[in-house]
Amino acid sequence: FTLTITADLGASYQIRTGPAGRRIVAGITGGTFSGPRVKGTVAPSTGADWVTVRPDKSLRIDVRLVLVTDDDVPIYMYYGGLLIDGQARTAPYFEVADERYNWLNNVQAVGIGTVGPDGPTYEIYALQ
Image: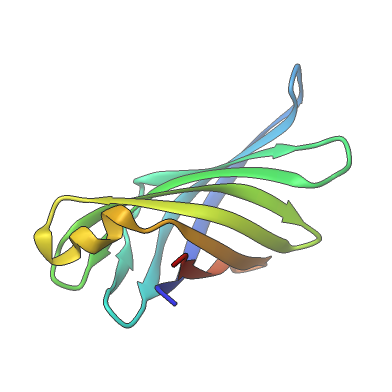
């Protein structure tokens, strides 16, 4: 187990009938994360959730955001994956330039999440 993250989403924008299908973009306005080795907040206005609604109604998600640790270290986080019936499966990736958190640079993770009315919540696990 690496961390749990909860993100707050802002207004969303939709492109309803584009050539690739329906697109939804929701800004990430904040949130929190915590785990045994890292804890902090989701930086506001640094990311978004880019969603493609597929013909079978499943969602392809593409998220980029910045986490800020309690000791003020920024961490870039990216994850893509699928959302089906409110259940998300993702593959998070991290980048950090502070040696206290360099271990995250070599983590390949999987995320299991749900998306409710208050936004998404994920449990992130490092693959061993």
